[in-house]
Image 1 (spheres, rainbow, N blue to C red):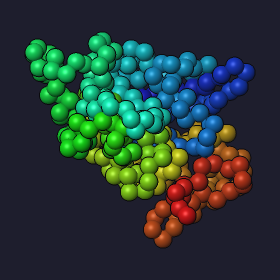
Image 2 (cartoon, rainbow, N blue to C red):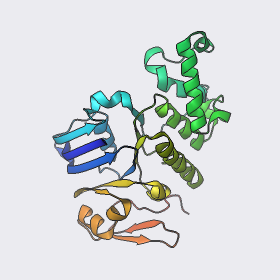
Image 3 (cartoon, rainbow, N blue to C red):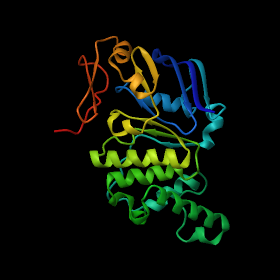
Length: 273
């Protein structure tokens, strides 16, 4: 089954066409990256799949139906939020909010243990904390753990309702290289072990390149989708950006995209000195 399918899709915001003629299919259990520079509409694509932004034309199907109907089966992690160091809410409570925060708000300490539903919820929270390897710091205030640890807790929050599709909007942004690699491996493991389909918005494909089943590359000239080696090429990117673009492969396998100053995202280490 195709978990995500867009056909001849276009989005218009006001008078501006964000992207058009986009054809994308994502199969069950696949790990796919959405790539492209700022302003090209990567986050807009995620919002289309959530039913938050309508198509101007074309067709979109998520989990076999409309995006709105598919929402119960979707886990969503928006662009990175920063937590105040003084915030005292524990990581475990942030994860629990993904399960029942829309009904009750922050659960009262101790209240969950008195009902079978509460006990089942507590067990599920423990499961996803173990899945993202966050059990040992989940009782600490979320403002007191590292950026990579916060991101693991937020991924657990998105997973706690057992979604079939996980939408992650720049989960690696603002993380240092070791944490990027660690979180990328975690997401790939979840995709493989849990059978969850993952769409991940990224600026830099390199931390996740070895794990991907496919990429969707958005550009000024539309979009291209397929296997990474088929899409991230000089020919394809030059067509997307209507400008000479060269894709180079470094000795360590990392990709470097070379082009005009207004060319697309640079797939190299943005944190390098």
